[in-house]
Length: 287
Ligand SMILES: [Cu+2]
Image (cartoon, rainbow, N blue to C red; front, side, top):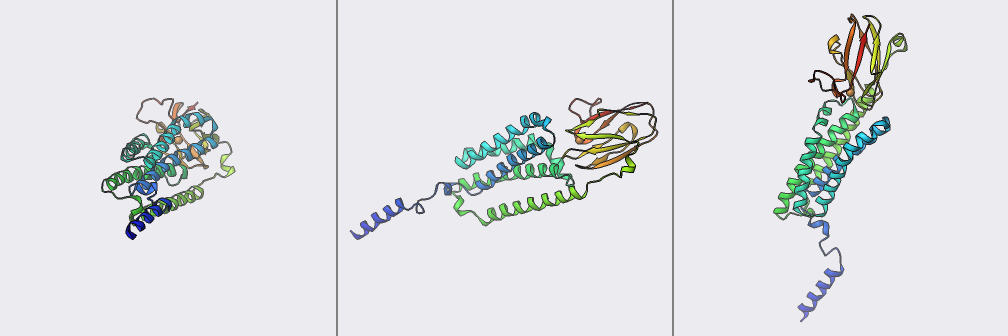
């Protein structure tokens, strides 16, 4: 009789006390958090870069929103599904992560450009986000099958989250320092008689550069938050890198009269015979 009564009391406590009832979130498999973090990182990186582009070049707002808007919307939706629903949602999120890896594979090259923090941040954010989304998602699916829930969150998961956050912070800070410290300027004396060229909004301005005679100097300023370079293959200039906010002088000597293509090799398809509309090019006309 006493047993039955205390049992009833226990049941009543369990119903009244929310801490005795397993919280909704605790039924999530371990590693779900990592996957959701990865999806948020991809969306956040895309939105941050969109904001950076719009702030420096409002003209590109439409173009950049059409690309990163859907990427952010789909990854945020996948994050909500993976957090809210079951194994199917986490499987869908893995596919979304893999699709993001393919769609944004071009950002990976920016990992080799720590001297430009927006490029580097984009590459790093996407790469880390994809690894967490796919890796965390697969780990969560396995954990779910084995019945391991988030309340049993292993120290591995905790350490991974903290390690990733610290590594990202340190890498971005180092890249920001490199970007600021690596900014080059040109002495005003050197710019006398030189032709000013600006790189802005992934374009050369002017689009047609005129040079009277075989020799001359270009003073090239990168007004974008992205890394650009300058190369005139027909004149063997090599590739001159211009980091965000930097100005450099490019010497041209012995150019025969004619028209030459000036490339930013980072934002042009060099395999094509002729530069296309999407390429970041200008023409150099030598008289
Ligand atoms: Cu460029």
